[in-house]
Length: 176
Image (cartoon, rainbow, N blue to C red; front, side, top):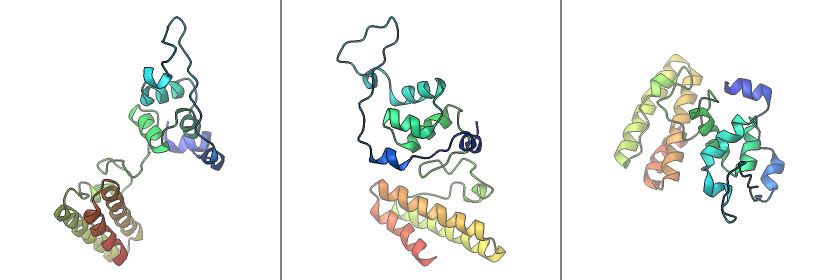
């Protein structure tokens, strides 16, 4: 199922009312004929990934519904479903840039790096060259893709605790 089909079938919204709810304790449903210790929870018997796939295979295809039942991040649920072949076309901050996302992906393949400040600077130089190339062509979508990649680099570096590397991307973004 493609992301577009899933959206048309049932919106992928994490409704605001879900955001205000307190996390609910998971209901432990034991399989027939399987005796589990009374203190053992579903989370101890199955991984989140296994529970996500089980819910999807049982007919719960709404990501927000799975998120609500499992207590996982929407991006994690979507990535698990994508890896299992149930969801196509999903991309977020942590999706690899090596996968085709759109027609611009091939230009930016293997450009993003923030391992060291030097790698981040080199990455920004490549992004800048591509940004300028698309500017010469008058291709605003290509320029936007360059900016998205720089923002992705900034955020990935930031959330990895690499503040100097994040700042390199941030400065380029502020200049564009």
